Amino acid sequence: MATDSSKSPAENSSDPLKKNLDWYIANQKELSAKYDGKVLLIVDQKLIAAFDSMGEAYTTALKTYTLGSFTLQPCSSGPESYTLMLYSPSYSLIS
Amino acid sequence: MTTGTRPSGPRHQAFTIRYNGKSRRLISEVEIFPAFLPTSSPPQGRKCKALYDTGATHSAVSPQVVAELQLASIGTRNVGVAGGTLATTSHMVNIALPNLVMFPMMPVTKMVLLGGIDAIIGMDILGLGDFTVTHHNGNTTFSFCCPSWKEIDLVAELQDNQRFAPIHSSKVGRNSPCPCGSGKKYKKCCGKGLV
Image (cartoon, rainbow over all chains, first blue to last red; front, top):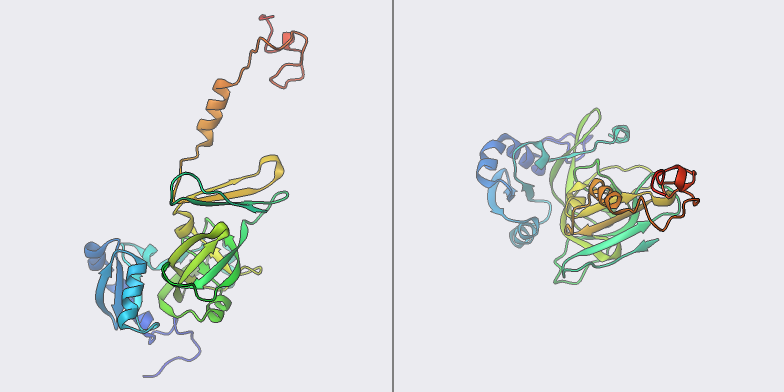
């Protein structure tokens, strides 16, 4: 698969973790209705399991998957679950 | 200067940072580790200059911290700033604030930071406890307690203070300066008609 080498992995749509985020956003409504407040373990755009805490999700995921191959996604409605908002105007200079 | 106390309750942890004069930024040294369980021995950490930012919804670390600690990604996260959003990575860390106020298994976002700042402590951490900033006598002091210990309501404290303050004290002499601070004699100010 061709990739755009000028972009960072997170910006590249072929990055598996970026694909996992896109999949989460596309299915967020259904996921949040069922797993609100949970932490989702997502691999290859598939939901593997839902956990009560980030620590539990992290330690369990490492038993099966290598770091960098899975996404741990807090699940809730709205963009807050996947967006860090910086309200200080100075941050606009570094984006 | 940093001081720390542990208020009543076995799980409460707190720290206080005091500046000489007013500070325009709330900064302290923190230590960041690759994520580890509290039951295991900690891996090599990195001391970082952290900015406490109530305008950040989540905590963040610089790309240098990610590289030096070799933090693998646990997902992609968007960063919303003035002018749009950008995609970056998130990473799992343990964060030690002053006085060993520890936060294990915290997801942080990688982003470029300014002014020699290595990390941002955002509302995901600050929201886990009580956070105060004061400038009494012109000196900035900020304090943090986790988990939340009590509500701090300055309006209520001020009202209580005024309710119990002895405005008309019988111990004030009629020719003494008025305790209200007006500079007038008590007999010609708050004590008028009373003495």
